[in-house]
Image (cartoon, rainbow, N blue to C red; front, top):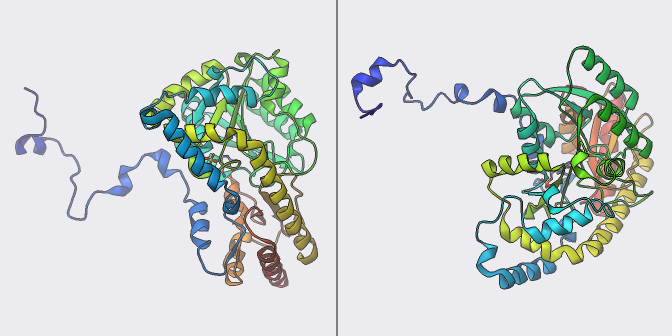
Length: 430
Ligand code: PMP
């Protein structure tokens, strides 16, 4: 009988490092993948938000006063009553079919070729990013990031050990000439990036939106160079000014005559910003070969998204238009208030974006200011923001910051922006 660990003599034969009195050698234990992940600035921000009197523009949370609490309570009761034990039994990995059917019609309205087979329910958009990385990235593969970008995506991709390449952006989103030059350079080195990660609507962190012309060009370039597009769109519903633009997924469907199986766009969205993030319900829409692989990846991750939560979200779907309207109006008012306060208070030399939706805007300060070094002085004045550097996976952005306008009321916005402007002025005075 093979009993590898049962005699002292056997364990002496192998010179394995043992666990000493001080406990395991943790440092050497972890994978290079997790070792490459930077500490979460987000966690630090959430801690900072708890200091009394702090106006925290850094956190990036949806407004809790707008969560439809009564309706969520009713939907939970209805789901349990209607589905009984099924609501707490294991479910299918692909997700709750009525929800997938609804999403197949909703994600690209009017594009009949999308079926529930093209929809994978995920436990938050964050899981979509993790599992997309899991199915696409081998160590050393190139992944293109519009820069700055959502740091949570970088955190999801990093453990799979890609090489990131930064794609510059301006006020209309990705700089397409720079992207084309980069793709050409990489092709000359024999490298085809696996995918480009982009947030076309009201981007996190900048609040910017990719123009229609650039959306078309992005599809042209990625088609030409054989690069998948990961379109992350959790904020797309939250437009409060300007005209709606078709998603990259929808534009690509138009090009394929409505056939999602010929599309190279992997579309991700979430109910976190339209209903409530704690429900952890999100989805991916993609070609069948991709959703088939996502099913395998998800089985190994969490088997399926909690059944009851999917049923609650399904019960809440009729409420969605009214809820989204409420959010748009409220975020529009908060954004307007913050923009007015910024224009009143900020010293010359500081520029800002003008978001048409979502939850964020972006400040660029004069070159000599480091927003990272300035943060403790802002916190002393009881205002916090998210430092720009953490949205730059490859460095840069030292003089930038993200401000979130979704949670603060008018008085807090005024107080916070006054304190921020004072801090910046002091910084500029040296
Ligand atoms: N993508 C982007 C761009 C985000 O801003 C967020 C959350 N802030 C997510 C994905 C993840 O959201 P969730 O997991 O709550 O759906």
